[in-house]
Amino acid sequence: MVSDDTAPQYPRSALITIDVQRDFLDGQPFEIRGTSAAVPAMGRLVRFFRLKARPIVHMVRLYRADGSNVEPCRRHMVEQGAQLVLLGSVGSQLAAPLLTTPETTLDAEFYGGKEVGPVSRLAIGRDNERGALVLHCSRTWNVLGIARHAGIKEAKRRAERIYPGLSAKWLKTGVSKRQAKAYLDKALKGVECSFCGKRPDQIDQMVSTGNARICNVCVRDIAAMMSIE
Image (cartoon, rainbow, N blue to C red; front, side, top):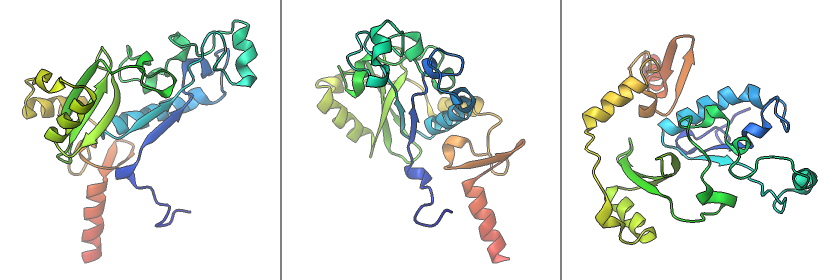
């Protein structure tokens, strides 16, 4: 039963996935039964959290071929040559529905949960709350992590502390607000609120049934109108 103390706080939420790697999918040599059936729903959640620029943490296993970092219950298999979520292997990669693009791969710069070296690319953009997002990206611009700051100046100041000399290297993309809006309108066409037309990235929650959708803003407004009547 959900109470005021246990109700989800969606604007402050983060998404965590655990062991959703290809070697653990149904039909693979090291399958965890039921994972494949749950992956489509996980993919939808991941896409929604990305649209809202909210944290996503993928907890994964990346084993060394010598078995030195493998838990005891699987160590012998890896030592005997089992190709189980080995660093850089196809089986160690996330299930396809969780990826930003089909080419996205786990980046060795963060191997073992630690930052081995600086990320290859950084980007800064505004979020819907008039703050700024710093996107930590791989060489192919796949987003590895996101940090939110109060504004563009604060984001650049914090980035400069980690990457000295970066301030002089920022480049403007040349993408206008109109172009960005047009891109999002096209990318999210068909999943807007059926009542107000807002996109998923413009609201906190969206409830859908069949082809109809309603956002949390419209639910609140409708509830207010009904209470007045």
